[in-house]
Amino acid sequence: MDVSFTDKAKNKADELTGAAKERIGDATNNERLRAEGSTQQTEARARQAGEHAKDAGRDVRDAFTK
Image 1: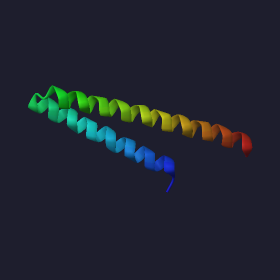
Image 2: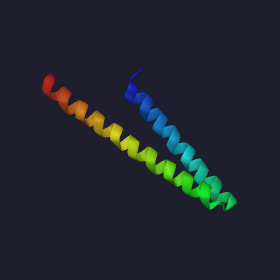
Image 3: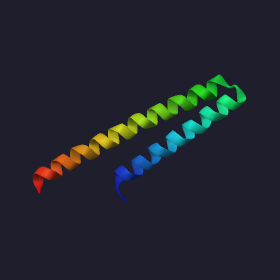
Image 4: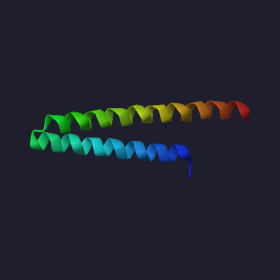
């Protein structure tokens, strides 16, 4: 299994966990949980963007080496 795939899966799981925390925080009027969930989602999305950038860089490199 590709390391990038594993990282992407972990990032997606973090994003979904953050979304759940945010929804639970909304439902229970828990501002700390809501903020924690929002932060977790944002961090996961930023890591996902980094993974996409690495993939794009590999694609460009591969295009020139083939």
